[in-house]
Amino acid sequence: MYNDDVTRLPRNLDEFWEVLREQFEFVRHVLNDLEVETREEALDNSFPDSQREDAR
Image 1 (cartoon, rainbow, N blue to C red):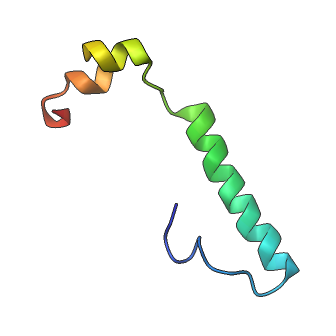
Image 2 (cartoon, rainbow, N blue to C red; image 1 turned 120 degrees about the vertical axis):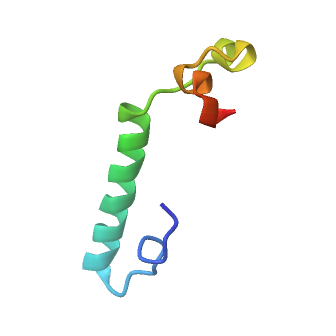
């Protein structure tokens, strides 16, 4: 999300709206599509990804 092309300053109003749309789409993806670990899962290490060997 913080690559140079995303954090660039818009040169004009059209590019401003394009950058804003890209940011919004990324946030929507994170909030709607990715699983979130609950507090209980974090404390007892039961979140599905935490069971993988490479996640430790």
